[in-house]
Image (cartoon, rainbow, N blue to C red; front, side, top):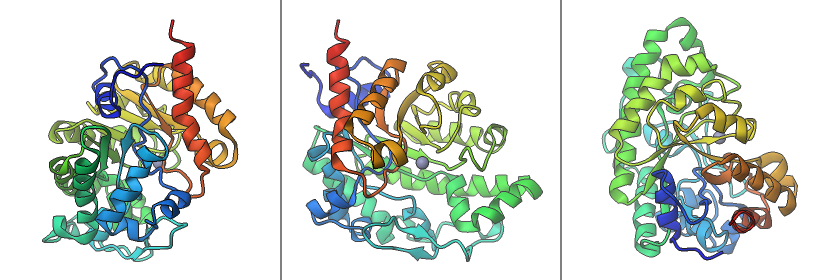
Length: 343
Ligand SMILES: [Zn+2]
């Protein structure tokens, strides 16, 4: 097929729900692997802490995999580190994590953004990497930043269990915490927009296994709506797990896209959001991308395209040992599908 748009034009048009020459392949979450880290000598955890390495590793998404977008934020912990959480930085075969055995906060009065938050090295890693990518990839490729939502930040700062208990015992206190933490999301999001991000992923882990659709409506829908209004760029909400029950609420937030999990059938998800929001996803990670081959990847890509999913991507951050041939199969399958469906 003849491509008439640059990857960046393609992604921006899709985010705006405008016509595209072919469906873009753009992952809102991490697509770097150990193999890619070795290839450009940018391993974890250094690539999460050094802007030059972060940019170099992110660029492999375009140069090696042929995706239409790159993203220099590989984990979910940069803000939490800057807020003062206890970190476990791990090695190159593991994502850095927050040690949650010792929460840093107990109630809403503790919630504060430390002075110099935007100058913290783990924050600057992302904003500087975006500037580097913008300079190096110019107008060619879309750059997707990422700012964590207040629900995820609360898990890290209060501990998952403590925080979920609070939603039962002290729902008003939870809302006070959400309203204070959402300012962290805005602050970091605005800094990334200023650095040159074309869109922002907004992960907020009200996941299908821990939180119900009603919880989403009660605690998060209004805040997510506010985020879509305040952050002046397309937002891509990311929530893992089975989320069909909350998709009708998510579709009303004004977010541009929802990054959905393979636990939700693509056609069922498209029917549920009914055009209220774009969908990106949802190639399965643990079985398809990690342990199967390009043919199975191809079939899942076709299933998404047949359903009308507007951007194709793995369902979530991929396992770091994912084989490159399975990732490269995603854009190849998209092109193949468009050729087969051209007339
Ligand atoms: Zn996820």
